[in-house]
Image (cartoon, rainbow, N blue to C red; front, side):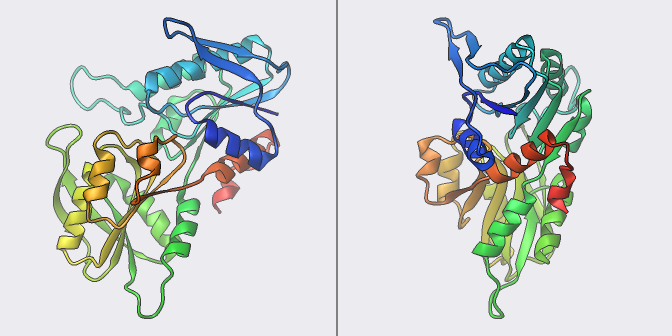
Length: 314
């Protein structure tokens, strides 16, 4: 088994390698003068089971091309099996036609990865579960819920005088995800009813559930501009919530997300390291990161050994 890392998230790739006690494969993933991607693998991979670790986060197009070219290089070097490990799957929010003459970009990206030569895909918290069906190759979709649940239990220890926890979905579409986390924590759930007047903007319409006096934890898969989370947090406090924090799998955090979180009513935002973060995020007092390297590393080990991946979530 070999691990090959692109440039999108070297720190996570190294952490996965440390978990597996396996060094990253020596390779050069660099640019020509005109910014074209060039890949050279400096080790023999013939007959090897190779895992390419690459999140297709910002800059999404560059990181996607790196992934495709790494897969092509491995295929032409006669690797036995190639697994695209994508902790964050870019273009996942375009998973259906939302209007006339619009693309389904998630399917296009799935086709590109398959045609490049990947034999299977390992991802985490896809924005929509049906994206697994966009691939014509085996696909494993990990969930960060066990990691989040452990961190919440350690951070929000509940004594007899503490306000009860409530897990809140920032929209109707995330109810299933929120209920899975709430079941692990033996907590109640609430739902923020919102609408989007325009792409990238949200407006809270109503809160489903009694949040008065509760310690509310917003749980979602992606935080981009943070507008939805900030608006939802304010609405929860206005309805009587004692405190509000947020746990999100993928911290896309486009501008001005960090500033919004800093100025918000939320006590903290917890994200995973599925996306490499800039210094602005790392130094923000209200944003904290938990690692999913052990989760992904264990899934890679199980795939390589032909063991069950779903057992990770029992």
